Length: 339
Image (cartoon, rainbow, N blue to C red; front, side, top):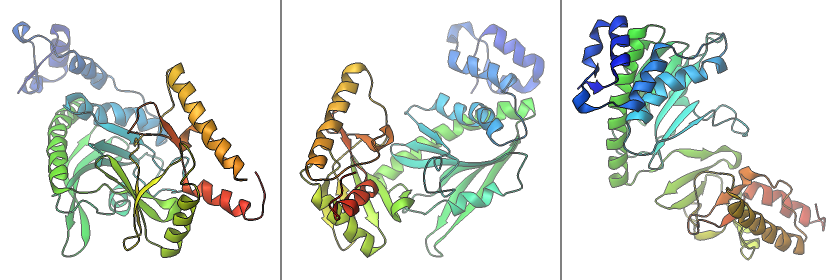
């Protein structure tokens, strides 16, 4: 299938690549796919790169991630450096793609300044919570060399393996066009994986390493699971003590056998409130929570936007909650100290 592009873009690509007809065409009767037309201009002249991994971020985003988003019929949420500004160190993927709240696309990237193996990190940073889902899609990159692959789990052996599918050299213009075609195919596969994941009721492997626990998104709810019984009991006491705090994160259901908390539904994304009326509502809600805490001789000590979560049950309601910070609060409160 050839995608219609502008007259200028079509002949521009034909001058570079005789096989361009396999992917694009110029047909006035079909119109122009302008998003693709713009993307192909970037493919011809991608962002410049340097000698470090960070200098390749825009390069990988334009040539690997953007084609997937461009052709997808559903909203894909991409995130990079998910370990940054967190205490999880390097235990989370370099690149993460969420489809219907499932992390079905991920990538590991290395620049020319390192000899680390990104392929091994794909397995090391994954804990399989995807049940009978046949595979996850991913890639690993060493500078301009990108390998598209799949993560396949063997339940009998409790082992996940990386299966290489195709490798491209993004420094070659023909391979950059091929990467766009691969992105088209991956976007379709991600939609099918998402549908299968919903039917199978699988969970996403989003782990909270600060508490040695796991946060799982289930439909519109959020489950927090703790491996350690002592940690679970400590967190239970924290949530019990703040159950009457307005606009604070609350527990909907507790399963002691599984050491699991079902939280009141909230948004996955920690986002700043906009516009002004939404910002004012958020500030009022946070202030109400602080007044309640201070009345109990408790203090939050870290009121930042990353600790303000949107409540999905009410679009304008933002709640403030973080069990680690409240744990600090309670320890200080035990000595009758405020702040």
